[in-house]
Amino acid sequence: MNRTLYFLLGWTFFTIGAIGAFLPVLPTTPFMLLALWAFSRSSQRFHDWLYHHKLFGPPLQQWQEHRVIPLAAKVMAVTVMLLSCSYLIFFSTIHYGIKLAAVAPMLYGMYFILTKPSHRPEQS
Image (spheres, rainbow, N blue to C red):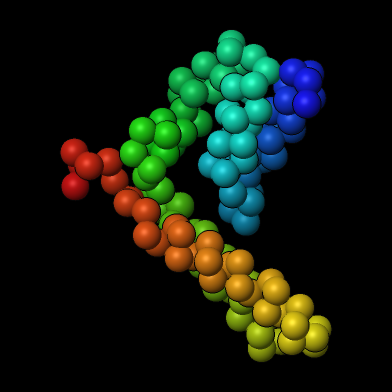
């Protein structure tokens, strides 16, 4: 991919993440991580701007330095995944194979999220 495509991806992910800051069902940090990754391949200036951003920078720094997922983010993510899984399992009429294909990655996502620390090591 060329730098222009990464740059456009960076702004696309940033925009989705910024919208997620105002919509509780849309995660912010994963999209900001993707934006940071895309900017790292296209623009050091925008990478540094996002990494040190007043609002979005601290979670990105905590993830990059310590693989920390804040407790509030964990609660929100796991709650949304549990609600989604519950709906699929109990109320959806789609084929069980499709249910399994959707629920399995969510269960892995919950495991991944819950096994990461909630605070930096020195804050424990």
